[in-house]
Image (cartoon, rainbow, N blue to C red; front, side):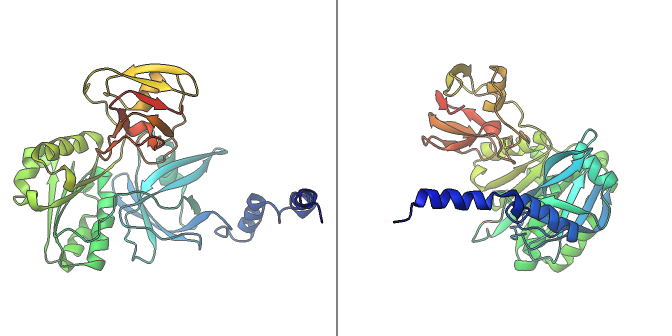
Length: 362
Ligand code: FES
């Protein structure tokens, strides 16, 4: 009887032999392939920039042709882009603004004043360059079956995933009843304005409303409700900066429409909210620390205040770097409003607040 342990060890030694490199080293083989053709890869999603469009001041779209590793996506989803800047790799998350039925992908990126990656994309990336992407992710997608009536509500560059949903609807169901309300600062800041007008020509039941704050002042929840008289019958898709998002969420919650609200957050960390009740205790099992919270700040912030250093990335519920297993207790997910109380569940610390005493594998 051959000794299987020896056989396996010999095979592993052979596979790890430096003489076989790069054939036995996926990363090295990938690097070699990239020398032959920049988008070739055995495991990584790469995409060549085939066009760059200026959409509005400080907003650019990168039209991309992905390699064969690209698995396809659902309208409304996002990807991460990894760029090498001064020798270090940096990753950020961006929504796709194209529709799944489009021939090419489109990433629309607003330059952020201190945004290392957004500035590098705007200043250094040119047509012909190759970007590294992650697989698409995100639950901000159209449900099946589609709701009868929809409200698409966006502010600023929050229009990106919402426009993807609308482009998808134009291809799949151009007769769908949609009201699209977009809020921007000036007429020049109205991203995709010409394209949306063209889409409206193909969608007879689409009503476009652009609220320009420099002309008509800020819009509040009453203003939005006044714009859409049959709002109670509509399923809302919302994306915008945190304050806008919280304003709409609060009103939709108060009206009893929260179940028909899907939202995507961008543009900064989850804001603190008012304390929601009595103090609860959070036990960090691995580090053997305990801290208290009244549920006004995400667990990531509370843990950092208590001297812990949980892994994190985006701090806004997108990258999932901060996921942590909850052993007991219940949390509220601030992005979805859902309460989770299943022991063993992975929660995202940056968008979860404690609702009861908790035990975390932290
Ligand atoms: S830090 Fe990115 S999801 Fe929490």
